[in-house]
Length: 271
Image (cartoon, rainbow, N blue to C red; front, side, top):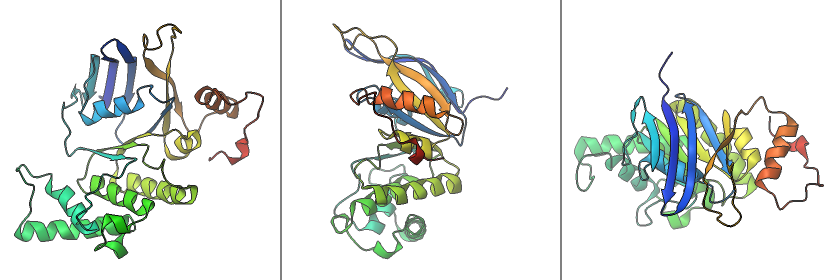
């Protein structure tokens, strides 16, 4: 039996007396696209940060190729946030070249000579892939929200990560632009053979983009101590084999304030 690419063994995460995650156990094969949904504060972004290396489990093990996940970020793991992580004083091209330079084991990450020319060529090619070839010399303040997010994705993918982490990357975009970004991220996933983890609050987005959907929720609740128990993965579903009734059950679970007497329009559900 082959070794999983990523494995979580009974992971727990706690901040003081507040328990965020508990008993998270799962495996992921290289090349999968996992979408994570759940209520705000249930630990989805915390799990992403553990993969990135900026947070560590309080208990249990998180393994990459059978070894402990590195406890600091590295070029093998790229991340894109909802808020655009770009440098406002640099052009679009310079932003992507800078991301490439930060891979260097130096204090500044500056590139010179042939190395810089090669990085600029790679950056221009990446920007073409994400649809920004016409904006190489623009500054971030001259870009729309969708263009800024394309730039942030180019910064992450230029470093050739094996794992791409997306923390609600499209939440601030309008529906039309989000559809374009969906096509872009699916194309990059296939082209670069990435393993992707994406946090989203949009269940339809989760089912449309991923190969597997994880629902994070608490199995135990104490109304007098709401942070006494942590969330775990309550559903782990292949997105192409989920019945409409289960889809509706998860949707109602994620949006408990919605009247359960209202029937969702499942005819719009992506297939």
